Image (cartoon, one colour):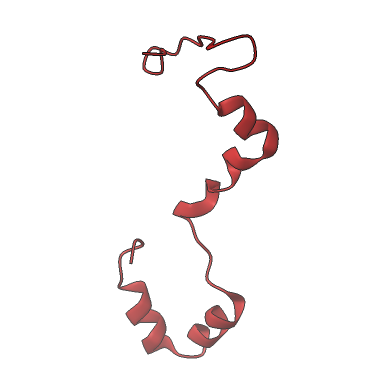
Length: 66
C-alpha cells in the first residue's frame, strides 16, 4: 500500500510516485472537470428557452443530473 489514505507520499523509485496529482496540476488536467457540477446550457438553447416559458419550466423541473 502506498499511503493514499494517509496522505504520505512514498516513492516507487527515484523518478516515480504513485500519486499523479503533481502531474495533473502541472498539465491542467486537475481542473478539466472543475465545472462539471454546474454545466451551462449552450447559448442558442438558452435563448430558445427564454422565448418559451413552458419549455423552460419543463426543463427546470428535471434534476440537475438528468
